[in-house]
Amino acid sequence: MLNVNNIEVIYDDVILVLKGLSLEVKEGQIVALLGANGAGKTTTLKAISGLLKVESGEVTDGAIEFLDQRIDGKDPEDIVNLGIFQVMEGRCVFENLTVHENLMAATQTRKDRKTIRGRYDMVFQYFPHLQKRVHSLAGYLSGGEQQMLVIGRALMARTRLMMLDEPSLGLSPLLVSEIFNIIKRLNEEQNMTVLLVEQNARMALSIADHGYVMENGKIVLDDSVEKLRENEDVKTFYLGLTEMGSKRSYRDVKFYKRRKRWLT
Image (spheres, rainbow, N blue to C red):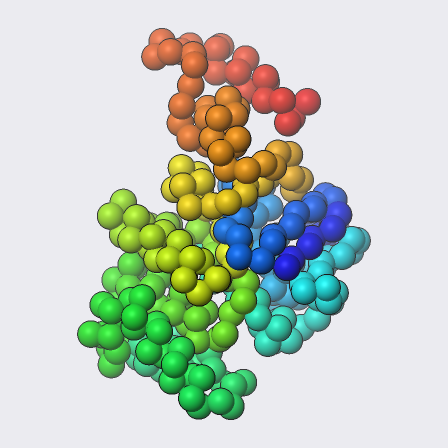
């Protein structure tokens, strides 16, 4: 469905952020994109969604294809109409609009009222708590409710590829589990394809089919989630597991970091 082929991204004509990045997302998959802060994960999503343009960023090399159509260089609104929706980090709701108005804002380019009504009902099927707050201002919702709302807004837009940027950010473990269970249900029941950027690697790998690890603007490791969970470096640096035992000196940690095979 999505093919990102050897792209480079530069901000302000001088800052090289992505350095020959390639990845693919097959239809019906959940693909996790992991990496530390500053690795380039959000920039990757913005390169796909076309939002780089509003931040003085540009894809200067390589190509991005969606359903065999090249989309790098297209405007964000055209990319949305093709079926790609980016759920931004930080739950970007329209705070002064109600839940209903936020959902309907995603349908402004749609004319099929029957389809819109079906999508509207589907949002409340997956997020019944939102239905109780349908006339509440989005700015007064809790963090979990706002995350549900922005995912619901993506459903209203007839999304085929949903790109989620840190959906667990600032949420309690119980809410994180609920949100990720709903993402998995959308994948299984609606055949929603998902590209997931997430710091909570354990949770991301629990629902994904395939995973990529980014370091310094490059993909340094990719495999099925089963193999990634067994990778010793992934265990140590992303899953909080280690073979070094409980008595670790600072010298040991520095040595182990130097061992990261994708930095060599």
